[in-house]
Amino acid sequence: MDELESYRETIQQALQDYAAVPYAHGAIESRVVVDRSSDQYLLVNVGWDNGRRVHGCLIHIDIINGKVWIQRDGTEEGIARTLVQAGIPKERIVLAFRSPELRRHTGYAVA
Image (cartoon, rainbow, N blue to C red; front, top):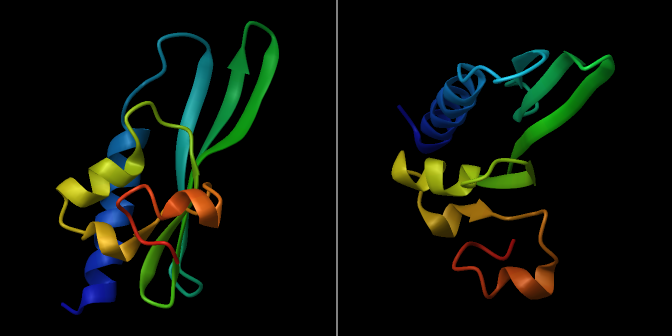
């Protein structure tokens, strides 16, 4: 398996693992949305909680020019840590939700 395919598999598995954790309240479902042709990966939440509609993106990851760009990370522990533990090198992960000026201080790729 080549490097990009390995990243794709790792990202998809990580999102599926997050989606498997049930919410403690409300009728909220987590869904993994994958578009491998454009290398876009999402974890979205949909449902209802106390009469309020829940619909939002918890995690958004793109693969751009061979690097994993985390566009949105709404997790407590950080999806980047999960991906590193699964074998994706820090220098191949961009914390895109951080400004380019701050990225250089994170230990992850700048771009």
